[in-house]
Length: 309
Image (tube, rainbow, N blue to C red; front, side, top):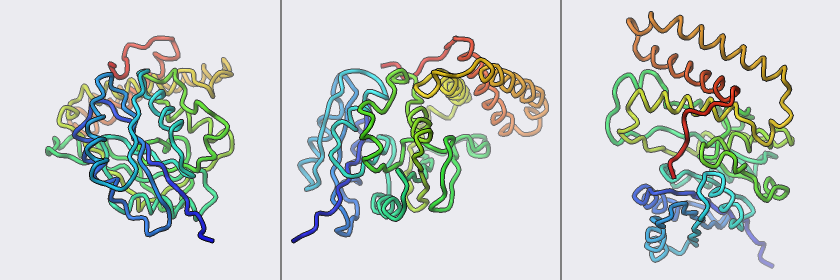
């Protein structure tokens, strides 16, 4: 009797990025699996004009790897991710963003790490990929850098995201709508999801041998981009989610005090940093906007919106 090997569904949620999507799919269908597992790809298109459909059709004609296309009519990050999970058939479910691309050993390294542990999920590094050389302050400020860890490191909430991850399917068995639709247009649905999973005693670990490379377009090389992103991140972090419904008034008050103190400290430092080290000035200005976003959200104000669908 031939033993059935595990199956992985790789999920890609996409929105108006056909060129990036094509590059990603070209690499996904050439993943090395060494007969340890089989895999398929699910593409969820959140564009009303179905810009990803022709890309998927072209790839399907060139590979034996199953690549399935789904169009999610309802706009939103959460809605697209929920559709991906709903249509995934694998024993394991992986996510990678449409503006990223991995190495050919990406999936097998994630698989080996999750099956060699008791973790509910495994995350890998996301490394900036510049097609145009960025300004020096962007590189020196490290605003696009993310922390990396030795393989097997248990991760806390601050390091969890869905840009490069594999899950045991059991994570989703008890939650048919895992990503809160209230975060659909602002983002932050992954942070909210992971916090709930941690509260439910799930464990997530790191695999440093499974990097994904995120393309950073030239239009992000602006101060306005980083400040807007920080403000939105702060708003999203502080706004109520499924795990925050019972937030006590004392907790909210403590968070307000912490953010006020942080803004005061950062803005006290800024006049000195702008003269001496511009990259440090930008780093702390961004941090202050993050806390400003939290304060605004706690006051019920959202001056910055997410994706304009």
